[in-house]
Amino acid sequence: DWRNPDRHATLAQKLVSDLLLYNEPASIQRNIRERLLAGQITAQYGRDKVVEWYLNSAYFGHQVYGVQAASFFYFGIPANNLDLSQSAMLAAISQAPALNPVDTPQYAEQRRLETLQIMLAFNLLNADEVTQAGGNPPEVKPATITSVNISPAFTNLVLTQLGKRFNRERI
Image (cartoon, rainbow, N blue to C red):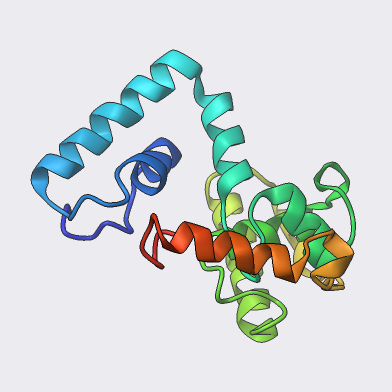
């Protein structure tokens, strides 16, 4: 439905919507532009690059952007060391950042399990992998802002300056 700007069929469409067409109101024309631009980006740069851009720009709650920062924030490890259970948790958070394991641990756990079931349904995992990962909830060790080397004063300055150019939703 073109009236729902938060619904995107592909990651490329989500990127185009979030990064290029963020200030355009929902319309049929915007929807067509989103699809055309997403197709052009995918054709020119490839799906792997689109996935990389998505993972580097996705919001994970608590002012954390990108899967690497999220991995450090929630689990204290680099993204390339995530196990299946942790990866499923981050995938779930990226779709609903407010339902993260710090603020809503029960909902985050439920969404992690749903993510594993979706991966099973799409034959991305087998039943044994889902059973093992599902029975092994990740230990969440949320980092503090200072432990991920972000100065609160710097963050506030950047947000203030961005507020002069963009609306709060965009920031």
